[in-house]
Image 1 (cartoon, helix red, strand yellow):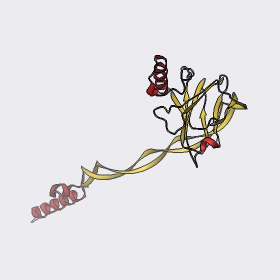
Image 2: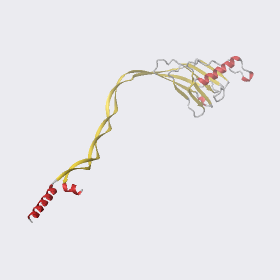
Image 3: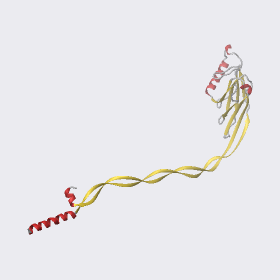
Image 4: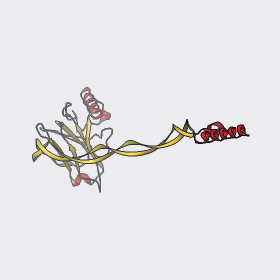
Length: 250
């Protein structure tokens, strides 16, 4: 009996020792953490800058007279109307001006009938001379001189830049305006019965003085703004558990 009692005591002590003993083991767990990220935002910044600007200007005007003027009873291809064609050729001295503009006014008489007024840039081409025989009927035959004139005219009209045009008639505009910078010569063709279709041709010029000027401007400047982003990750941790859990496989 004594031996049995001692054996029981030893067994009880062993069980108590197992119950209170702990071992360390690794376990996985989901962990929440935060990372700092950045987004771009913009703010308005005021700054000054020195730039080239117009600090002064003056302007003037001048009425122009045609250097060349002629009339023929022909209506050229691409034109419309009746009464033949009037031509007015002008020269410009626009060098040295910052801006130049030409304004052409049409008479009321020319406005009373349907026709076409067209302006050509003749810079580098030259003025168009009058027809050798202004009122000779074509059916009578073309002389070599007239044939050369007609070929030259058609070549000019097909290559020269058109600066502006106007169809005459009731309710139509009575002026043509074009920017004349770089234009040294131009010609006006008018298909009309009216011998004074063009009442005035006026050159307006502006001279600008360029200087330094300090101006205030705004610009958008980017900057970074931090913010927290919640994330999760799986981590391995160590923890102590009773040894009996390990033995029982828990």
